[in-house]
Amino acid sequence: MGKIYSVVAIILAGVIVSCSSQKNTFSATTETVSVGKVPHIHNDYFGSYDLEDEIFGTKTIVTVTANERKMVTNSLPNHKTGQFPNKGNPNTIAAQNKTYTFPLSPKYIGEPTWVREPGIALNGVKFEPGTAEVVVCDTGESYRVEAFQDLISLGLDFNHAHVQPTGAYHYHGAPTSVIEDFDTGEDLVHVGFAKDGFPIYFSKTNAYKPSYKLLVGEREGEDCTYTNPMNSIDVSVADKHDGTYTSDFEYVEGVGDLDECNGITINGNYMYMVTTDFPYVSRCLMGEMTEEEHQGPPRGQQPVGQGKRPSATQIVKQMDVNNDEKLSKEEVKGPLLEQFDQVDSDKDGFITKEELESADKDDKQGPGNRKRPVNQN
Image (tube, rainbow, N blue to C red; front, side, top):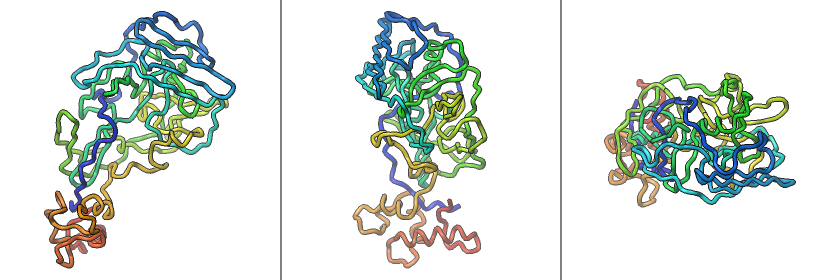
């Protein structure tokens, strides 16, 4: 497979967050949760409630009106956490000033809306299953690193949570202390609300399975690097899809019990499940959403470059410093520079989008017709 494409290094979106490098480490914590000022004296968190804890500093006030559920919170967890900062996470937990509103009568539309923060736990701490960590390859691919993997140590605690540079503590998977604290003895534990208004549950018996599976085959990409503000490491991605990256997984309808957004209808009520397998926490929502909550790619698509090589148009746009819609040897980088003369079919000293597309087409036609090494999807 030819390697002519090189992408300008991707600036990591958002802040660098840190997550544990332990794959599928979901287990019940043995920590004892101490509740301070206001213990949980009722089991119904669908109504108004105050959750204040003098020990941990939690202050979450939920008010239910005729049309909405309003949560005002400092987003401090009402339970023990791991030690922060730690080796994988240099950040310190700090109070936030957040107000969330959820529709009281959510509307199911059945079309996924991709979101970064799908919901909020009952204690005011947000769920954010994805990460900002990306492995970038000189051959054009980029791979979003999952929270639960063995590639990099990112400092998750026993609640499958960690801290962002803003001080925001958040859950990437099953919030073990929340599950213990809000357990009423039933299999399904109510742990939060999604931003479209539907509730979020956890099944203690793992009764509901996600409908995602690992892709078959191997990833593509050479000369790949993971970089954060503290260091940079070389990474080999050319391996089988093992769950290290988000793009290792695909949704297969019916392979499990849950839909694309990790949701299910039980006794006529739609709800989301936090699971011990990917996607752990929903990456999309099936209810009606406001425009400001739309935070991801359309259904069935990955972010541009995620696990894929860029198109000829993207290559030209990214490398064309002087905006003349063609690339000189001074502008190109990586493997494309090494094979510049082969791709420059008219030998005018420039590579155009058409020449890149022609080279790609020749490569896909097979070795017998290949004029030069190029990208192969």
